[in-house]
Image (cartoon, rainbow, N blue to C red; front, side, top):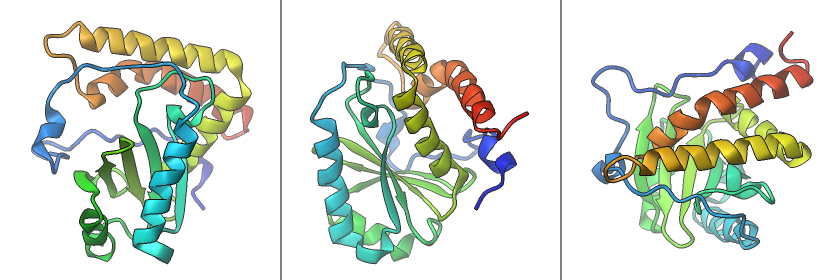
Length: 205
């Protein structure tokens, strides 16, 4: 189990000099960022993709969680289902990745500097599957953040405003922005919410 310090520390996912996280070069291209109102179909979309992962990996899928904004009822979001998949060792790609790719998932990102994170995409419904290892602090943070937003309407509204503002800012650029640009823009608000959440849970003084 990660320590309180590991859970509350904002681990830097920025690539080291010269490193490129994108396996799929198209991932670095800007696009129009769409933030839409909550869709009641999103939980069912998650279940469809989760069932596909289970069918492919079986017991190798140690945990599968619906995370991100589409997992929070009432929260506007980019229409992309975010999923955390926990495997025994994300760095050991041969143990899981070929089977996912053969089943139709597309390997998109490799970030060994950030919790050995891998990302694969599913096309319909559009889903991003974030692959981490057991007891990863980021998985715990994602689940805490989900619960906090579900339980606190004012934080949910604050985050919704930040998401809309980030999308507007990205789309004011020629050609739009990347998902990573969008995340960076709303990061200050996200970290403020995390700070209040961690303090309420007694993880920060």
